[in-house]
Image 1 (cartoon, rainbow, N blue to C red):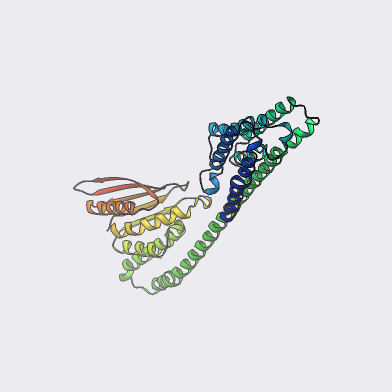
Image 2: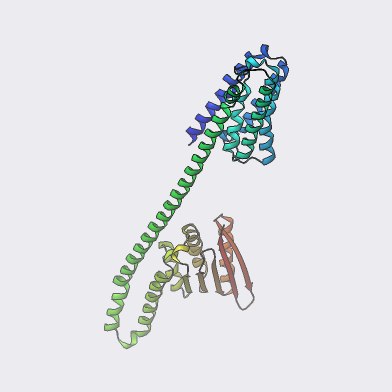
Length: 360
């Protein structure tokens, strides 16, 4: 795309600063007010250079007053040139403005000011028509058509190119949207596959041995067996209720937190179409250090339906709540793409922290 832009810029500059100005300067002896022709040439070149700035990476947007001012340059340059030439020279390069000003018209169309470009062409046609009506040329209708040929060609061509660019932009946007959905679907499929593998691993390494222990255990071992069963149940429940929030780091942090006696619930109530992978990745990056800092507090992370918000609650001692708040504050200053709103309540008996996390 940059190569196309540079090619367009090169062509525009070659036309602006070589052919057009050259023929205008060579025809100055035929002009009855050469200073006026030079002024018109300078204005056309300056405004045209401003009009094609987007080719250099400038903004495409152009205000309506600026567009109308650019459009006015087209007929005004005609008033500064054609009336001061002999009618026999109107269909020669001495009457340079109908062609050279078309760069302005094309730029207006490409910058989404078709009406201003059409007004410029209509006003220039009126200038040419008035000059022809005041002359005694024999075939004024033929001359009128010939003099307006650059306007017809440039306006229709630039309009076609603009429509082609718009259609291409829509096609590219649709392709990117399809590609994004494909990536999301592939990521979801990979997550489901990872989850299935994890469940199989849990069944093979945790549930099956646990069932064997149930068969072989003695009554004195039931308390330890109950704790083991509860740990397995929590891991399976995490995978079923919050698959997207789990990776190896978060799983390790969950296991370590529960081994310390921390009660942790991780719940993802979003629908499949509401899952934002970037937001989920940012939540995983925050959840792991929170679990490391929570001590033995009760922690609940929930993603409600909608997919644009996550809530985190921590109930425990004052030190535990403050430690989690410090972790979130450090993570926010480190620059994750999350907006973090928190409410910390502490007293001598304990502490609680309520947090809302939103994608920026």
